[in-house]
Image (cartoon, rainbow, N blue to C red):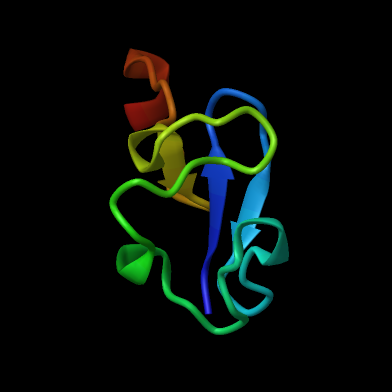
Length: 65
């Protein structure tokens, strides 16, 4: 099961735990959340979430040497 992090407030949606505050049962994959689901902490939409471990990383030319 995956973890998703809100890019606005750093709230973590853990699929294994669900989101009891909004009535989402444990085991609900992020992709299966309703389209109108919002972050429990800051009310940001699903588009504000990034899968944990997949954040963008800035690299410069020295990183390729």
